[in-house]
Image (cartoon, rainbow, N blue to C red; front, side, top):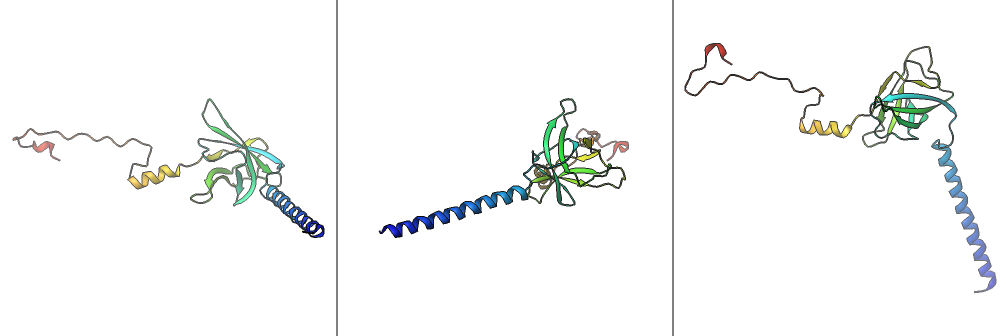
Length: 179
């Protein structure tokens, strides 16, 4: 091969390599800003939940299906055994004080997120405030298993019934103790 052809190949390969690197950097920048991985300025709200299965740092906080924040920390209260969810909410979104929050999922196999249902109060939650109405995650697989097997779905014990008196064989039942 001539030196001129090799030089042209090297220039072409360098240009292709530069284009690939540029596209990769653009994609990473787009993904970084689109997913909100950057620092989110806002204020902190908290919720105490009995179960936080599927939640983690970075989990979405949504209102009307729109991401308005993310989970910043999960802690456990050793006295009450409730999980405290710390979340960062965008500064431009004000949440009414009587709003509720619940752990839900994006479809049957989707990931978990926190969904805020706004209340009607004129007073807004302050930074560091707690949701009064909060519902933790639901064990969907347990519910499906109970439904499939027809098991009792309540947490209450089955009702106690009085045993019927037994009559000895060969003796007629007493008319006052009939079924």
